[in-house]
Length: 220
Image 1 (cartoon, rainbow, N blue to C red):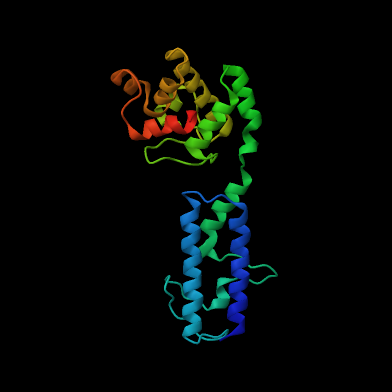
Image 2 (image 1 turned 60 degrees about the horizontal axis):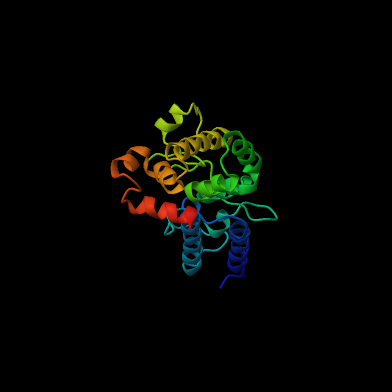
């Protein structure tokens, strides 16, 4: 077996380890990263089994690429990703650029402004988006506190992906729900998750599994 093949794989695994060791495995990033890793391994293994050397013609690999194993890496002292891996790499970089602590000053500011407990705001952000300011739900809710476009517009939020606007708007909405239901946190959180119309319609926490689990996660 070609020793260069194993050296290349070792460099690749070290690079992936540096990524995975310092980033969160989330819904958006984890699956893409695992798939890219699997594709790279498949490419390299298939090329080695086919006897492809460093100067041989490159076959079409299992992932659809046309390259020798060397072309999976760019020249340099540290391995870098070719375009096939850029999507996973960009997502990891985005995760590294924003951490929960980055929003402490914003949370403290809006907590004092609207009289909503800062730990509650943090918990809502954790459950809603895992502190990812770019996340969009299947229903279209956006940003850290998962504001629906219509709700954001009503709150005067012009950019739901801006952390300051999102946390300010989400906290104002949460405060409105707390006041609407006279401090009843179960009803307030149910309204935040399912909308006040559903809380009023059912005369309490709606019989939605998602909403009931949401309240349990936040209130224990």
